[in-house]
Image (cartoon, rainbow, N blue to C red; front, side, top):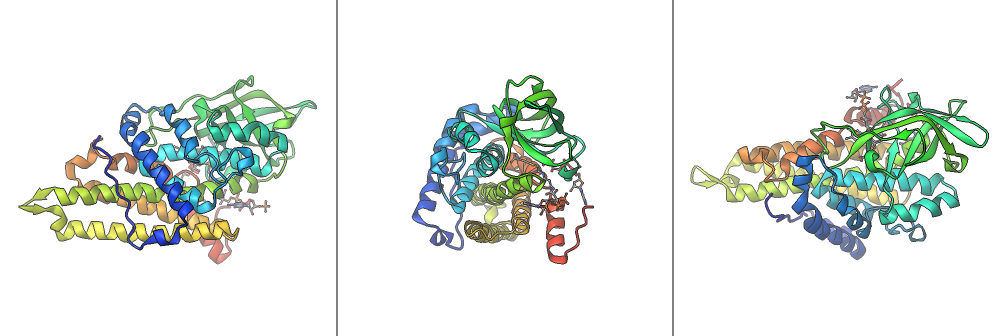
Length: 392
Ligand code: TGC
Ligand code: FAD
């Protein structure tokens, strides 16, 4: 793979909107990605392997629980810092950002928000340091966009719960030490449970043959009469709103992360277009390639403003779930379109692993589907503005 020459575009002087702390956090993540992710990621993606050696570094840059309070091992940062870290990591690879998103928003967040003090003390510091990796099980073989229909269930056996069911498409599953999973009790009410590796009847087979997110491990969670200790139930909230509130946090991170992938594609295409000559001049001097590049920087700038404003609203606790859906949907579509256009600017070279663009493009095919599909987020906006839900 070519050396990482990335220079971040900032067409509307967005740096003026960030505090010194935001810029420090972002620049530390940016340098770490250049040093530790860019040189190895193409090989790992080609081999469909997760680069486990980067886990410690992710913890050091604050990517595991950026906004979790320091007393639980988190970085104690604000929402915009969280977004900027996700942007920088996804600039390197969406699969690496996935690992950080799941750990922070889908494992640490529910334990922090809905867990007991004992659960927080037991799990959060180890998750923040990367000693433990976690995964989040909501999706099932028969229930993806409609998690309310989930079939996983648990029974109260007096001194423990007995858990049965299966989860599919679970990021980090094959090596996760802990899984925050969602299942129905005997009354059909959804609850979160912390399932730990080693519990009898719990297995995590890996999903192979993915063309997307190849550097992120995906798998199933199988619960075959798993005895879950009662102290592993998350008592703070039940109902579908509990897992959906975790998704709000993860979707927010993706709205920022997608900007990183788009920036990398744009920056690579701009540099290539300046250097590559055809018909006696740089292809950057042709109107057609300028149209592509000009539209890319315009869309990136709009996405940056959307993410920044959403970060301010989240920090003030004023962002709605529908606003988060709009930003996730818009920014991921923006990134995937830019990846496709950038790939064309590189001609044949665009399909090789010498450049990051094709990997970003394939990764974004998952990002546009997980955490709520592109269609589901449109329907959430539709419901929000009309008052009519079309899901049911
Ligand atoms: P609905 O009846 O609308 O809502 C049920 C309850 O939930 C509340 N609620 C929310 N609460 C917090 N945050 C949100 N975003 C919420 N949306 C809804 C709602 O108020 C209600 O509360 P209550 O108290 O009245 O019970 O639910 P529905 O069954 O009609 O479904 C709505 C729909 C379709 C929007 C929802 O099911 C949905 O978002 N589906 C998409 C599923 C999804 O996103 N799955 C993601 C799985 S995790 C994943 O992909 C991780 S990838 C990780 C990585 O690698 O990065
Ligand atoms: P379906 O729900 O079957 O949807 C199929 C198609 O139908 C989509 O185009 C959808 O938009 C459309 N559709 C569905 N309902 C409607 C409707 N009402 N109106 C119009 N169109 C509709 N899940 C987890 O729980 N944890 C994870 O860590 C996790 N990681 C993932 C990692 C990867 C790489 C992938 C690919 C997925 C991951 N997921 C995870 C699952 C992901 O959230 C689901 O794939 C996603 O929610 C969609 O569900 P589905 O694949 O079952 O598609």
